[in-house]
Image (cartoon, rainbow over the protein chains, first blue to last red):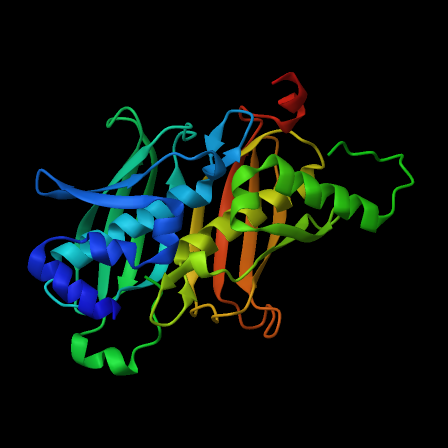
Amino acid sequence: MILDLLRQAKASGDFRPLMDAIPYAKWLGITAVEQDGALVGKLTFREDLIGNPVIPALHGGTLGALLESTAVFELFRASETVTLPKTITLTIDYLRSAKAVDTFSIARITRHGRRVVTVHAEAWQEDRNKPVATANIHFMVYAETEMGSAPASSV
Amino acid sequence: MSPGVSDPESKAELLERLRAAFTDLVPHNRAIGMELVDFDRAEGIAIMSLPYRPELIGNPDTGVIHGGAITTLLDATAGASVFTKMWSTAAVATLDLRIDYLKPATPGQAVLAKGVCYKLTRNVAFVRALAYHEATGEADPVASATATFILGSRGSFANMEKK
């Protein structure tokens, strides 16, 4: 079902139905829009995303989720194959405390190998030049024909 | 969340107080349903749980929860282990977090995470953490993480009353 939605999204260029089918991304408030040929992820601010109420600052985990989701969607969009990537490792650097406002992110594929794809993602808030967090992610990708034997993937 | 070193408070009472603080003071912990289930001051250990909920699913075909929810659990648990080791309400901020995804979480099962703050310096805390299911335990983890935290950042919980 997810792969069907991915096929449709790649054909139509509209990824919203696919995003809406991922319960966690929908619950957290993660969306993505194509902007100037790039995919920009957005985490819409909500009170219950706060991890430190004193500053206040967003929970680090929600930034990690935005970065990982943006990387997956960039992979979906840019990759020629229709596969569900499986995260192998994820390394997040937290650069500034993320304020109680909307957060945006963009991902770039550093290397697309046959089995491993490396993606770098960056998140910012009001100032594009002041990233709040960056992530480097290694994904395992499988060719469509191998999907049957591939382990269950978390999107 | 004051230390209360001289209080004749039992471990169970203290755990309940800390559990309530982690849930009540941190909106996202409450929203996602994470709870502190155990701690060990001497060892700098915190254990937290994340319930299995439909809204946390990342792959609707398999019901496996999203990596982002595991990231959130590991970040929170690693942070909690730093608080346990410091035994103060001083603010900490995650500097970096590296997660190895070892296997998909089992649908329908809660995920536990154990964080160990194994080194605390004046400015930095170093943490190892594992995410696992109760049934299979730490020997067969879902994910493994290492994290570092910078201490004494803005946002001390001791300032809660002043806000």
